[in-house]
Image (tube, rainbow, N blue to C red):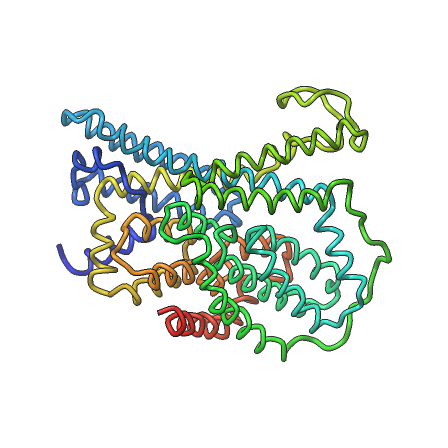
Length: 467
């Protein structure tokens, strides 16, 4: 194969990676990287992911094209294996991929349910209003929102945190567009950096933890590099923040509804339960999260029965008429279903590409020729262009022979690399929609050099202290 084609195919496999199939299926797999089925599968997924990238322009939800791509790719695979007398190989492979998805699906669903419950109880609205009422100047608000994004993200995930902090910025700085734009950049960097040192801060860190690559406490070794990643760009940007203070448009602080702070405690208890299941019982963390969902459901029942919620019917499955004020099924229904189905499409589609043989090609090029450190730095740069979820899937499924320092490095780079561009992370994409007209691709691109400086410095600090 010509070198250029080899490189392109290897990079394609990195951008559109897969999950490892079960060993039984792996022994029966056939290398189809040079077969028309392999080329067709790559073309299907590239087209689908192109539509994902253009989601904002096309107003086409990102889950639709990848769901279709996943189905078409596995049809091609199953047809080939059935025609060649191996009817169960594709079945074993797709079942393994689906099991991987199911664990992450229910983990994220519980976390999203808790966040929606906190939103409904006005916990985050109260935080926003308190910040507005304090009368801080623009520079102080720039630092406060960034620091809060950094420290809330490890618990509430980077996307939710960014949206909350952006609401604060828009409320206090709508008359100062430059402040809003720069604060949004700072929030994206802070949320992504904060999410990098916690298994709950980003889907990529969650995947690394659930795979058993790193223990829960080992992620905390990334705290100082994450701080550096956030502080360096923020320190430089603060000198360009407009002077003055915003004028408050409201004197009211939204009251937290009954049980709001208790739900915060239950969320912390749920996280502790998931960690304990993993560390002490050696069970998948998702089972601890499902137990934590029971905490929330029983507390919701208590709110209703104690007369603190407007209960008109019992807690029955969705579909019945209800007017209660606190309904867990409503919180589940408001989960980010498009994101969850997008996740399914990515896992199944790229699982098919890996089964076709492209994963080995990518692994040989990146970790064989470039070396672990260069490859892991490249992973972060790729995360700025393509969503970090498929990029991290690539690394996990390649499963290169790396020490703890290198696994921490790729966790760091995949988490913070998306901050280099506004489209490089879910937080950035969400804020472009929420702060439309203020925060844009080019307003973020203007600060990419200083963000890149923080990216490089965080890598240096990590290699310095964690090697």
